[in-house]
Image 1: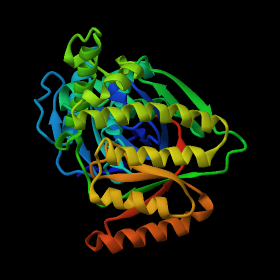
Image 2: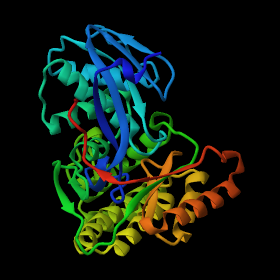
Image 3: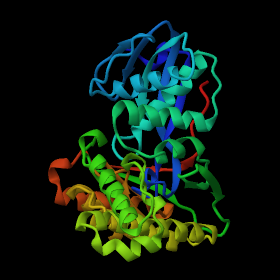
Length: 381
């Protein structure tokens, strides 16, 4: 088994949270995000081939640059996909031998994107490649969608690359334009709490792709009924459909498609209102919009296990929590919240007690983590 002390080089990619803009990036919607001061560290050395291990997952990944194997359904798929995507753009003469270490539980914090990006920054350095942040995002996105097969948008990768400490990332995913909005001086201090349910999840094995298809189907139908050009289904996004068209034809949509569209358009509006509240320093208003986003994820987008719904209810009942929701897709994993640092102990105790009372078998697996905002992916050292 490899050890961190075996290596002289390291790269790091933070985890991320998205307070507003959930489930809309793959529809070219608007999102907000923070990078966290926790993430995945990759300890490595350049080598002739790839030998990769993780302190968080079993198994070792061994392969060579010209012979990247087909998808195998394990955590190494994200790395194989990254090599294929980067090699399609640049000649890779060297691989890396290394060890990954994550500092938070897996599920809802975009561990997959952080794994890929920490690996890619190291692989670029080993091959003397200098790529732009936008290209880094594109390569990581392609690895997860084209190779692993999950229909994500660019939210995860963008938050983990563009985010900066103390600033809210506001991203227009359709054209990848973004703004980094500083925390106003009059805004009260806050931390980002992560409540891990004790149950990990995988997007590839969840209903994630089905939800994406439902949104695209709604967009395709709305375009057809309104007389819009609708083109290929694969290229269809709700962002292409004006809200006026949605309002006129929404009642024709099948119930599930209508709910997904309702979530998209209401979340689009919440992001805009949330950015206004943030600029004004109104953390209470921003937090309430985050709670509303969480409710829409439950009742309109229809994600969330019983465990995550219980955490959501507890967050709403707990003083010192400004706002919270599922983190990530909402299939198992964790919830995130913006919280008052002065209430840290009370928040952790109250939510832990309430959760363990409901799910006593998860005592010892449920965990609470308080994080700070951080800069996006660091250059490999």
